[in-house]
Image (cartoon, rainbow, N blue to C red; front, side, top):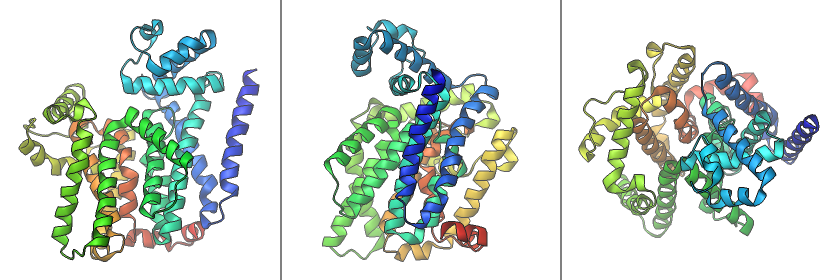
Length: 427
């Protein structure tokens, strides 16, 4: 029976992937299967990593809770549905769950639905999660290619092939589901930006995506939405009024940005003004206590005050983007991260040479907004989550966007694309 369920699920996934590929008529069609296979393999590799390298892994704990909830569904569907909608510690199954924190429990609930679909098969669920993230990223890249073909290479490499993005947004983890929803929201933003018609069903899916990201990674959304709102507001204002002075535009952007940011700050207790800095600093010192000294970013004298946070933000930004260096690694996994950071640093150096072009680009408002999203989320994560290993996973929330911007007309990428094997692949 299990073999039949496995075969049916794989057949269903293959059908979805084939239909997505078959309707693609652009040059993106040539990279579809390669990108998909790498994504699915990343999800499987994540499970193997936590099986053979780490002693414990939240991916299997989510699965364990998911199977327990699925077992409840098979014996008492009414209790299961009630727990999905408003389960709390009054439910009998509450004590049997490993994760009782809301965000983790949300993923366990999602996992339980796939446990029912796959007969509690971890590896099939991994394929579903990885495949969903891939499809979402694929349609985002497709939209970017349709609107701005000159940046196609950066979109492909940033969203589909960048190593950390490929790995940490795959498999049965929160980041996989959250990034699938965030990529979809990015696609919707571009549709709104271009004033395209959006169907009622798409708006419904958008609301679901907002709910998913907020439930799993609320801090991604707490920065994404204010940045998106500010970009759209700035676009409208600049069509009505002529503002040629660049500093004035930046100041106006920052002023508008504070409005939705303040609104977001009242939606979650951790973002209340009186708590936000205390939460960040307390998280930092908690990580300091449980991590090896060489595995964390150090902020000497970090305190829960605006001045202290601002003073340490530049180091947090640099470290969050480019550390650990190759001179700081002491494990095989850190070598992979350090090499990627070295590539990022080289791309950043190449991107600096293109700043003048970016300043006069007709898409400079979009580019600025993406950079601001990446900077703000990076600083927040690096301050509150200074452990290099954990940060390498969490930064997937901004890394594909940052890598994408760095690779737009980057001379290093241009040289790479001059090689026949890469040129033929993307044309």
